[in-house]
Image (cartoon, rainbow, N blue to C red; front, side):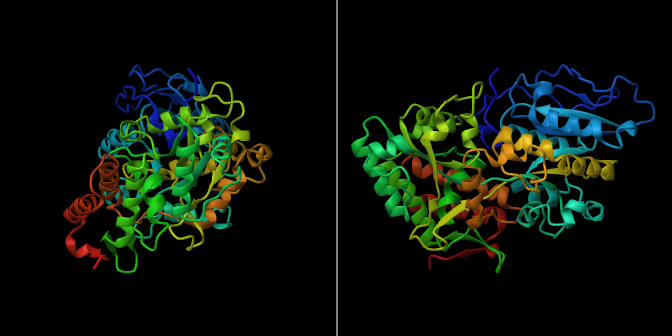
Length: 479
C-alpha cells in the first residue's frame, strides 16, 4: 500500500479498526499488531524474557496500514533498542495504532485511565499535555531530566520544552517533533492569474484580492483552501488560529488567566472565512468540512485546480516521490510557501502556529525511569531522528546538525522556509481546558463556512466556553 501522508495529515486517512492495547508476556523487542487484533509479534531477539523488565510503547503509526516493521517509528524504536545499553535487561513491546489521529487520542484516553492497559511510553500531541497532566495520566519527568545532557546543553529547543510543560510548571513529555504553518501556493496558477511567482500578500485584504484574481482569470480553479472539520483540532490550529493570531487578540489572556470569548478581532476572523464562502473563493462546504478535506486539496493542487491551501508545512510530504499518496514529480518546482499575513501587515508581518508532538510516560508505569531512559536514547539517536523528519515532513526539536545524514534534511525543499516561519511562531493556550475549547472553536468556524452568521456563531462559542471554564474565567473584549 502506498505510504500515507505524515502525522499532521493522518486526519485524512481511512479509519481502520483499532483493537485493545494488550501487553504480551513474551518476546523481546516485539511489535503487537493492533490493526486487526491478531497480536502478531515481530521480534528482534528470539531469547526468552527470563527476569527481564518490560516497557510497552504505544504510538500512532501514519506510515500506512501494511508498514509494520517498515513503519517510521518502528524503525526508529527498534534501531535504538538494538543499540541501547539496557537491551539485555529490558524487553520492549511496540504497540502501533493505525487510524485517524482523533481515534488514536480517544483510544489512548481510555487506555491511560486504567493501569492494566496504560502503556509505559506513548505518543502525545502537545495540545493534550496540559489536559492529560491535569487528569493525572502523565508522569512528571523533572527528576530524571538532570541525567540527560541534551536537555541542559541547549540541544533541545526551549520553546518546544514549553509545549510539553504542564500548568504546574512540571515537564510531562520529551518533545519529538514540531512544525510550522503557512500558505502553499501553486505558482503556475499564480502566474496564470497575473500574480508573480514569488507573490506574497502583506495583509488579509491583499490575500483576498489575490483570491479574487485567481477566480476571475483561472476558470475551474479553486482560489483558496483550508481545513474545516466540525470537531477537529486541525480546524483550530491550521485554520482559525492562523487567522486570529494575526490580529491583536489571542484565545487566552495569560496575564489575567482568562479566556477571551468575544472581541472585534475574533468576529473579524470569522468574517474573513465568511468572505471566502460568500464570494466563492474556497471549495464547496461539503469538501472543506469533510474529514478528507486535505486529500481533496492535495489532489486539486497537484492537478492545477487549486491556487492556495492554508495548512501545515509538512503537507508536501504527500508529493515527495513515487509511492507517496499524491505523487507529483514537479511539486518542488511548482509550489511556493507563502507566510500567512497578519490582518494589517503589522505584528511582525506574518504569523504561524507551531504545534508538535512528545513522548510521554504514563503515571501508571512501574518503569518510569527506564521509560525515560529509552525515550532519551531515541532522541539521541540523531540519524534516526533525521530519517523520521524526512519521512513525515516535520521539524526536529533537537539539534541534529551533527547527524551523519543531516545533509539530507537540510537539502529538503522548503526546509529553510518552513523553519524561518518559526520566527513569528505562536502557540496554543497553555491551559488544561484548551482541548475542550478547541472543539468549540472548530464548531464555530464550521458553522460560518456552512453559511451561518459569524456573530451568532461567536455567541454560541462564547456560551459553550463559559459552560466548561466558568464565566469568572472569561472576559469579553467586545465591550
